[in-house]
Each structure stands twice: as C-alpha cells, then as structure tokens.
Amino acid sequence: MSKKVKGSCLCQAVKFEIEGEFEHFFLCHCAYCRKDTGSAHAANLFSTTARLVWQAGEDQITTFNLPATRHIKSFCATCGAALPNVQMQGKLLAVPAGSLDEAVNLKPSAHLFGASRAHWDDGLAELPVFDTFPE
Image (cartoon, rainbow, N blue to C red):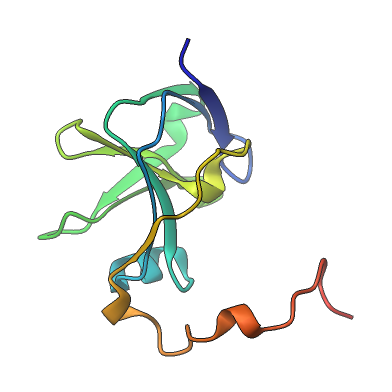
C-alpha cells in the first residue's frame, strides 16, 4: 500500500490527498516563485508517480499559467492559499509543502535559482527565533 498524505487550503474549502512518494523537495528562489509566494522562496515537493485526489472543493481551485513560461500556480479562489497542480502534460505533480496537513519524511535537498535570491535573503539562519509573535 502506498503512503498517503492529506492537505488543504487555509479556509479548508479545498481538501486533497496525495498517494505515493515524493522524489524531490526544492526551495526555489526564482523571481516567479518569490512573486507568487510573497516570500524568499517557494517550498515545493515533486513527484512523477504520486497520485493527487481532490476530496473537497475542486470547484474552488483556480490555476494560473504565466504566459511564455513553465510557471504554474494553483490556489484556492476563496482564501488564495497555494495548492497542488499537475504539470508537464500530466507527468509532474507539484505540491506546495505548506499545503500539507501532515509531515512528510523528506527535507529540502536543494535551493534552485540561487542567482535570483532576494537581496535580503542572506544570513537568515542567524536571526533570533521566537516560538510565537514577539512581545
């Protein structure tokens, strides 16, 4: 039996399950990923064999294909949270790591498009860490 992991959007309107294994976990610093996450990078899991099953809210999903690129983003039309999508004519499943509701036994293996890193994305590991919002 294949491993299954559940995920959802922020408002819980969209729910899904991934059946199978992820082959890669990348942190992408390209300008497109920085724009669509509003952050330093996107954190995405990839699989060529896993199966995506929508369990609720499939009609709430919007997918944007950036013209003249391979950049695709799927998201909940209600809350805007990033969601999985199938790319490359059905050959690649891309899953935003933050959309998963359960932990996966895989850590990021590489930073992609390092030359495109945000100018402020340097030395972040040395910053203080708070368990909650600082007072």
